[in-house]
Length: 335
Image 1 (cartoon, rainbow, N blue to C red):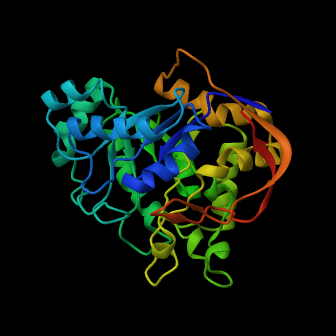
Image 2: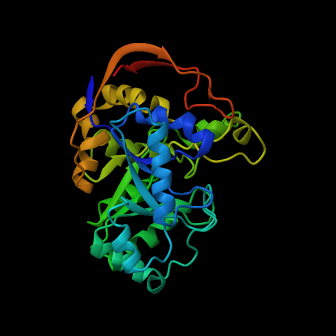
């Protein structure tokens, strides 16, 4: 199986020793990735963003990888955005305190408060990426955020709004109701339900935000992905945390799927769909939505060859447990 220019439209690479460990595991398989800005401190200025991009490229070990950089949302003025436009792919909005390193996110979603920045983004064609969860009961957080998505879509009709890592049938439906709404879907939300996380013994390495939902929600996501619905894109939301921050009381939210993403997607699409739809889901849809093109193509070959996922990935400072650790997979990335 061959894939042309695989894209990961939602990726966490962290920084420092963690960046050195995880970046090569994504850059070897993907032509480009949208890099999340929720570092400590978050990326809110161009100098910091450019320096982070340089650090990514330095450790990527692949000249055919493009980091698509994002800024952490705050009330930027139009002049700043005009100067930043050529350096950024999008701006990422986090509700305050809703996920990892989002304490400086947005707590006021009144249109008048957001209007200056979102109107400037609309005029400059800068997409808005959104982690769409309220701070309600955990299983309802994403569905309840749909009202905010509707308000944004109605008031900023020229703004391209990406609903990140959708996990409910509610947002699957909302996606079809508004022309300017798009979505990313993760690998783990195509596979997991809440049963997998806490149905037996609790599995901290499957805990993520938004949390895996019901079988009905998973079915709705699979229908969009396996049919390569034109408004959805693959975004891994691969989010590494050290082993000791996952295997503890109050463990961190995030699933580290980067090393196995393409292999598992190939197997899923062979079983439930076809290679043409995988190409659309993994690349073509995103290229059309965001007008992406590349001077040189990156062709990834996956052989039908069994391999075992390592139990851990580590360097001198970090140890991470990957999604599906120790399991046997049918497709292996060869080039």
